[in-house]
Amino acid sequence: MKSQGVHDCLKYWRVIRYFVKRKYNLSTADLDMLLFLYSEDIFSKQQFLDYEDLLSWDRHRFKRLLDNGWIEIFRPKTKRLNTMYSVTYKTQRMIDSLYKKLSGEEIPTSQTSNPLFAKNVSFSDEIYKNMIKEMNKSIRQQRRLSPE
Image 1 (tube, rainbow, N blue to C red):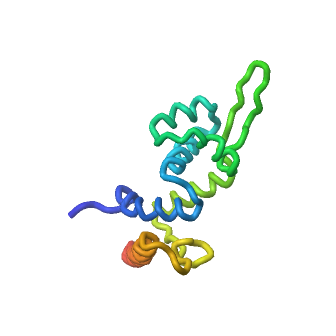
Image 2: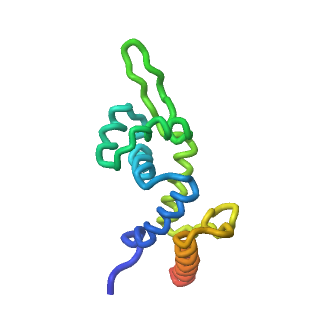
Image 3: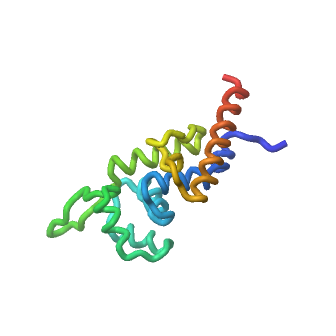
């Protein structure tokens, strides 16, 4: 029998990723970038560009993430120092929420908190909505079975 617990945190990664992308209107590459930058604390545009080499090409990504409030200027450019950036509070909250979902927190099922539960969603959204219901059910069962 396989051991469960800490090594099972990625079981629902695909479902959680889909939910986060839909809720915050992000692409997979944007989410990957924000996950990288989250742990960088403060970063330069060059660090951003170096990591971006791994992602699908999007020459507007940096400006879009800046304009949409995902990253912000930490220190403006001076004569001797380049501009430095950091993720915003909005990004920190989104990623903290993502990690909580990976750790076993349920995904919300209300229309106001989850766009997948709105009326007239796409077929893909409907499939993921059903999986979220199953995932939440499994999480609740696991909580009842685990010793406290």
